[in-house]
Image (cartoon, rainbow, N blue to C red; front, side):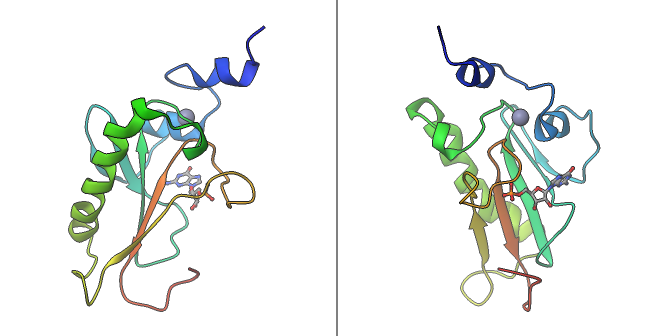
Length: 129
Ligand code: 5GP
Ligand code: ZN
């Protein structure tokens, strides 16, 4: 009997997942970027002058669920992050820069269980982090 959680995570979109709804446009967000696989939008409660989230459109709960099949879009996300950070107003490296954060699991501080990369930057102080 397959594990129910694994079967749920195999689907492209979860009906009760807030980030699946944001990627599908069913819940409004301030969009930063979109392509066929990836979506980026401003965090609703920013910690820093620039704070947006990058997500895959396909539902995957966390980095703990990533496999070799996810390596290509994960790599693309990492390469895209610096470009979007600059577009969104982060000061260029090395004087400026940005922080990438991937909270994973309860002890990792993850609250929304659809994999997302926080991209934060801009002049300090920040609210946290
Ligand atoms: P986590 O703690 O899971 O790494 O971070 C989840 C992030 O998602 C938080 O920073 C939170 O502010 C953001 N967030 C939660 N719900 C929404 C939403 O409905 N819209 C947007 N734009 N951000 C959200
Ligand atoms: Zn989702």
